[in-house]
Image (cartoon, rainbow, N blue to C red; front, side, top):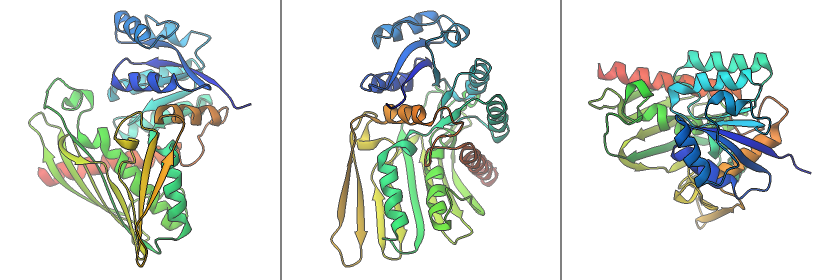
Length: 340
């Protein structure tokens, strides 16, 4: 019988709601408690998603014996405190991306989890989806020939609100920190395919883009080079609707993922597609259909991993998370240096 897992959610925002909605369709993972920034928010969230209860404090949630694991869906700067408290309570942790707001902070968090023997996984949910495994299988098969280049984008347009976490530096605002990690992690994954590793790190990085009036990056582009010769173009934005498409180019063709991060264009999509183009062949549309939506797939991936301290590939390992954080930080630093 496959393992089951009961979650307590830390946070009551949109991502937490999507998580609760998704897990309601699973027979293996469920949400049994929630804590918000106020007791009122927690009670309202529990009522909306028909949870058994809500907690008044984080300590109360972590002390609940029915909470077997914790899902952290709070603003980026709060992650470390919430992860640390969960580690102290010996609760396995699924923490929304980015795990931290700096490499140094991520190193502290991962070291603390490792020292305590507590599972800690960064929630890049696309890494758990069968779409990504299908894409990897095609890339590893050699159907594209020598892989030469990657283009990966994640950009959307929202109203510039200085109080929003996306535009407030104190809340970890900026496109790179919020969504730049997706294209960065994808490029590193493809580079790993080329080098025969789970992932690979760039040897060169250049950046350009725009810093908005609140002091955070609203558009960011990066060009990466890897030791294998693979190149990558990354772009992310919070003020430009750039879409979410990724394309991997090889000498014999290309593989396009129209929406790898949020399959089918929404958080609850059950069907997603790949488009394979090869010289001398008709374009081939490859459909991937799942019984569950992406957050539930991710939660079940975590259930399958326990009691180990690392999830199975291609979900984000500790080393992968640290490598990705280093690219994110280097990208942000390079952009600010260019624009200074």
